[in-house]
Amino acid sequence: MAKYKRILLKLSGEALAGPNKTGFDEATCIGVAKQVKELVDAGIEVGIVTGGGNFWRGRTSENIDRTKADQIGMLATIMNCIYVSEIFRSVGLKTNVLTPFECGSMTKLYSKDRANKYFSKGMVVFFAGGTGHPYFSTDTATVLRAVEIEADIILSAKSIDGVYDSDPAVNPDAKKFDEIDINDVINKRLGVIDLAAAVLCMENHMPMMIFGLNEENSIVNTVNGVTKGTLVTA
Image 1 (cartoon, helix red, strand yellow):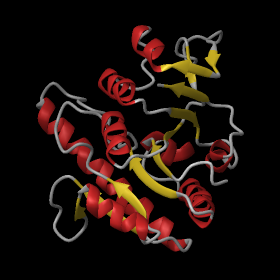
Image 2 (cartoon, rainbow, N blue to C red):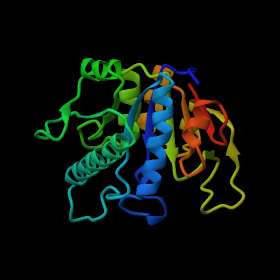
Image 3 (spheres, helix red, strand yellow):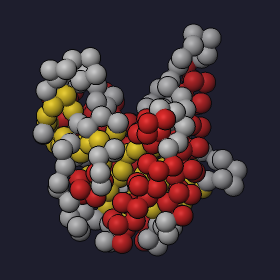
Image 4 (cartoon, rainbow, N blue to C red):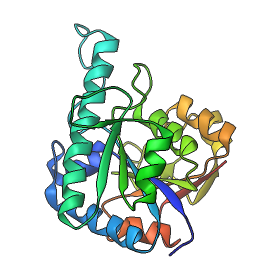
């Protein structure tokens, strides 16, 4: 299993909600925690970024300023990381939550040096709060942190099981890719990650595996190369 030394795992908020569609599905989170423990026990360093879509889906009202809406989204990711990190601790993992801005005593302030120190101690490091700036999604935060910490690959666990040529929820004949170049994702505007994140992947040659979280043992299987997801090459 030691194919990768360090991975960045992105957990979408929708996937964490499971069948509930909102909030947390504890059984789903415990399943994730057990899989991550298997990776850590095998010597793989794991960083985590969560989305916030189980609580907040961007600017949902014209009465809310975009900057404020994005700040609410940042706070949603912090709630997710604190919750999921506690679930991880319940299965025997050591964790720390880092944010790009101060959150009192609830989190630690992010720096690459601090993240590396925690990785060296066998901790799972949660990167919460996005980039700390509005107009940047958690996709962009994921790629940014992966590049900064020199991860080998991004594993993006979603409620959808890969990259399609169109929305499978709308088009039942949508074709799923087993592998696709990030340039094609950008040029075809496939929307699997936002454009800023895709360009950051391309410029820094950061590969990404996109797969369905809800498939049995999906995280461990993906690390082992057994996956039904899509490899996005860069």
